[in-house]
Length: 289
Image (cartoon, rainbow, N blue to C red):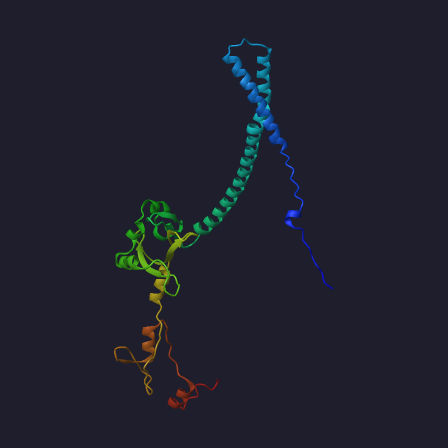
């Protein structure tokens, strides 16, 4: 079975003209403007020819005033009303945004202000944009003193550690780790504090450099503990016969003497059962054991 599909040719299709119906609003505006122009022309002719005032002049003026009222409503009052509503809506949105921003700012400020570490943000020009209150408990200087003096941190760093602090790199290592630095600083009261600092460059969403974000931790107690604690490590040369230990200078010392010199351990001497039987066979020192 053969199916044939036919389409009407373009020149055989009936072309129906589309109806054009102008908007009522535009039509009314055209009529109003036309009448106003006609009345205005009539008034101009009257004034130009110095025709005395008559009833028609007052009629023309009244018509112009009456036609001017809807135009003022359409082109002045109504747009201003819509604009006023938009402004009111924008003000409400702005109020909500400001409240959300205030809560967000309060949350992050509480986290930063009450941090035990001394946090700071230094702009690309060296000025401090934020210094946490913890700087006072660590250095003795207030955040306002850091805001007023951009070189205050550099001035209170211990002279022996200043070069190390200047040359350390703010950022990350090749492995992607943050490059830390440890230095000493002199507090306002003259004490020496050990600081463990981690800092890096910060950028906005467009990659623009916004300065340096740093975190300083007071590790003074930890450094003192490291100096006080003595730890034995590595291989110890010990005599297979007398059990003496050879120190780094080549001297042989009793094992208890060596351990006492290199740790905090203390010794109390006694005798084991095997040695007691060997040295004192006539005595049964461990008969109750």
